Image (cartoon, rainbow, N blue to C red; front, side):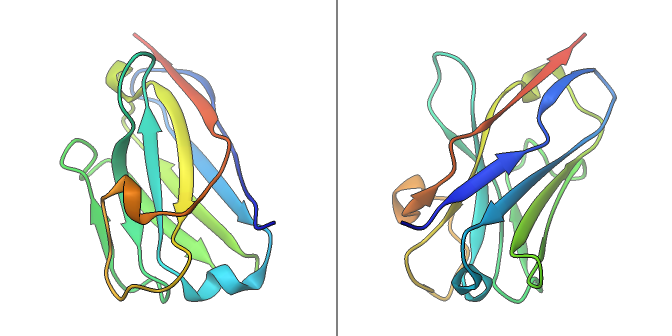
Length: 126
């Protein structure tokens, strides 16, 4: 089956930076929009950022605007999330996601994504 695998999480101090990576199992994902979500313990999963298939359009949650940058590499079948000026509130499990087909728009709705990675843990200490 199609698989997404995240990496790059870890334990860092407030103000530090991390870059998360998401590897797709096949090149078909190069033609799809993709997104990042996160989930803190005991809380619902929330939208973080999305990027279109050509990497010419992006969409961010208000809580991360100006600090996080989403990007992708079609040759390597990879998606990235550069996280700067990290805060304790950014702590959680981060997931990459993709829809089963191109819907022609960027979505912040969890229900509109069909494929998910298993998550990578990000912990920010104060």
